[in-house]
Amino acid sequence: MAGIKALISLSFGGAIGLMFLMLGCALPVYDKYWPLFLLFFYILAPIPYGISRRIVDDTDSTSNACKELALFLTTGIVVSAFGLPIIFARADVIAWGACALVLTGNVVIFATILGFFLVFGSNDDFSWQQW
Image (cartoon, rainbow, N blue to C red; front, top):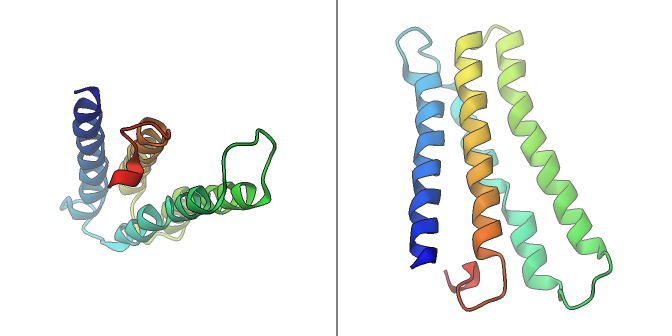
């Protein structure tokens, strides 16, 4: 039952994060939809780590080049997702208030993605590999 509660809370966190992103786009004060390009970053962020989890055997405690590359790529995607709204705001494409809402949504969405891998990332009977 603890897995169901975690799944419900993660879906709630994802919904709150997307709400902040939509508010940064759709409020009549801002009315620019350029921040929706961040949806690509949300989709791309877990892919390198998920691929490395499938390829790498976690039985050894030493560092692995594949896992390190996946973490590097994931970090690059996350930093880019935080940088894009700031660049949009500096170039006056979006307003600074919209940038703040989008950055808040970024924090919530990436915390939700991290929480997903922490909750379902272990190799026990209730893991994300079942999904």
